[in-house]
Image (cartoon, rainbow, N blue to C red; front, top):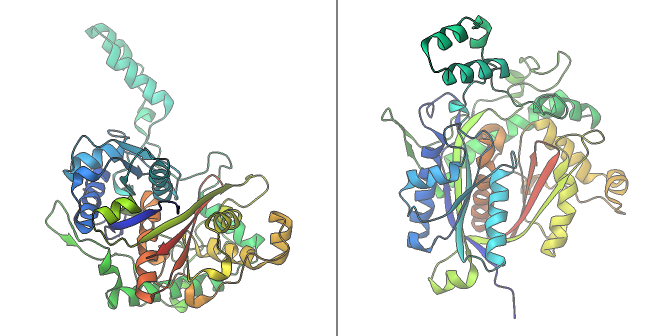
Length: 426
C-alpha cells in the first residue's frame, strides 16, 4: 500500500516590506495572525480540522517569545489549537513545515499549519548585563532608603543600549562579513553579484506585473489605515551601472553592498499541511506534496558559513528518490548574491563534490531558465522566520503554472546550516 503523503493544501504570505516602514507598528503576532487566517480561508476548511501550529521566528519579541501562540490568538482561530515556536534561523519556517510533516507521517495529527514571521521593526534594544543587574536590584529594593542607596549607584552608561545585531556568536562575524569572505573563496566578483541582483529584481518585477504573486500574497491592513498589497523592495529600475556606484558594506575591499544583499524585512507566511487521505475525505484540491526535507550543518572553522545547502542537496534528492536531472525548478534563498553564486559554484564543481561529498561527479548544472524564475530574497525581502514558507508557496504555484512536477528549495541558515526541501505539484 502506498504511503499516505503529506500535502500542502494552500497558504498565504503577507507582502514583504522593508523594516521600519509600513509595518513598523505591527507586532509579529499581528503579521502571523493575518497569514494564519488567510491559510484557513484559502483552504476552505473548518478551523476545527487544525490540530497543531508550528511557527518560525528568529528575533522573538520579549513580551511573547512563543510567537506561534500569540499569532494564533491574534488570528481568531480556536485557542484550543496547540502552538509551538521554532528557530532554525533563516530556515525556521521550512523547519516548521518539516516538523508538521513529521507529526502527520508519524500519525500524531492529520492536519496542521506551518509558517513563520519576522518583525525586525519591533525588535527591542538590549542593555548591558551591568545595567540589567542594576535595574533588577532597584526593583527589589523595598524601602525608600534602600531605593535611594541603589539610585546612588546609577551610571549614565546604564542607559546606553546595545543595538540589535546579527553577528554569529561562534565566529564574531556578521552574516554579511561571512558572505564576503565566501565570495573571495569561490572567486565571485563584484560585477557578477551586481548582475545577479539586477536580474533577480527584473524577474520579481515581471512576476508582480503579470499577476503571479496575487496567487498567494494577501493584502494587509496597517494600524494607520493603509493597505499593503505588494512587496516594497522590488526595483524595476535597478541597473548594474547604478549598483556599481555603491560602496561595500562589510569590508573596504569587499564586494557586498546594500543592493546585492537581501534587505532587513518584516513579513509572515503560512501553509496548511494535511494527510493526503484526509484532504481527499474533505474533497480538497491541494497545491502539492512535500517529498523530502533534509538538513546539513558544517564546521564553521573549516567551511563557509552559508554553504550548508550544498551538503544537504544530495541527501534531499536521495530521500525523495529523484535525481538532479528530474528537477523542473530550483528555488534558492538569496541571502546575498555572493552566497548564491558561491553555492552554484559548489553545486557545479566535480572537484568540490569529490572532496566534500565523496561523489564521483558534480551535484548538477544550473539551468537559468529553471532557477529563481520569479526573483528571490534580494528583491522580495527576507523576513528571517518567514522565507521558507514563501519559497514553498512560490515554488508550488510556479510548478502548477508551468504544468511541471518537481521543485527543489534551498535555504542557507546562520550557524553553518542548510535546509533543502523537495516538493511536487499535484
